[in-house]
Image (cartoon, rainbow, N blue to C red):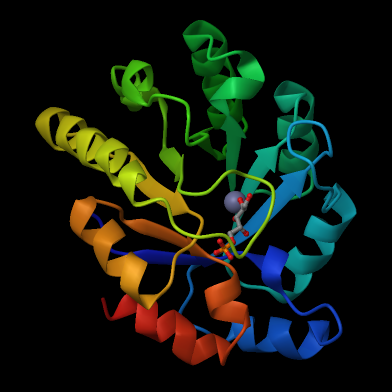
Length: 220
Ligand code: DX5
Ligand code: ZN
């Protein structure tokens, strides 16, 4: 299994202390930073536009891990790649779970020099994607309903992680398995044991000392 990467979600940043928290985050052991884009249609919440990603990129040395929860995945994949995404993850459901459209968008993202990620909501099966993992750099398994930080971890999502890990090991794929939603020091252990190598954590990281929170997740 690959080295564990922590990707703090800046959805949970305290925006009244932006510059202090960004400095702490920049100096933490997090290798990625998770940037949640929501359009108010695919999910009932609105977040960041591309100029905000450009701004964060200027002050953070981390890999920009962009998760687009938007209906128009094709359009916004390019918009956020132009703005500096290093990993671009879109939702399978935004393309009606159409495998050929999903693989085409992954190929397009890769052709732009960016890692291609595909995410599934809790109700979406991961099974059809497993035979295409050679074309997917990051499989993002949602462990909450996408839209908001601070929700409880859905432990039954770990079955998807175990299946994906099995297929990755059997075929020697290099796909990362990332999990998003409800990660804290306890659920991180469950996720890691099930086969995740990349953990997104929002409220757990930003509601305490950022650097020690990241370290506590790395120590699992
Ligand atoms: C939810 C977002 C998550 C969110 C996670 O739709 O995709 O990345 O920020 O927040 P926590 O870790 O608080 O569940
Ligand atoms: Zn996310």
